Image (cartoon, rainbow, N blue to C red; front, side, top):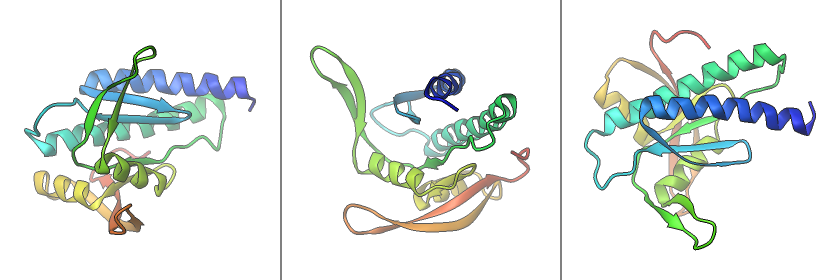
Length: 171
């Protein structure tokens, strides 16, 4: 698989992911190489953290199903993706004067990035905070399996879990 094929493949995937963001009212912050970063629509205060977390989880599930479909379509047996989900706050804004760019920052953005980096291809990994949010809002709807502990910048550890929706179609 050459560079041009890789770019074509990522373009196809990201175009589908962009459609999901519109459907779920999720904001795409950026893409960095083959990474696709989303947050809930930025707002001043959290109204319903469970619904927000559920929408991002639905996005992750749709992304995984798309990966499986595209993998079969193009015969790329190693095509896969790690997905990490964390709940928290962030600061966002436009930076630059000539080449404007919207970006988001904060400890919770970094934590989400670390959850994804420590993830497992083909699975959704969630932080303990995301797990607790999903459990409180939808008890019995999800299966969480302990995954790993990641070290945050402040030297604290954060537990992560593999997350599956009970009764979800197989990937």
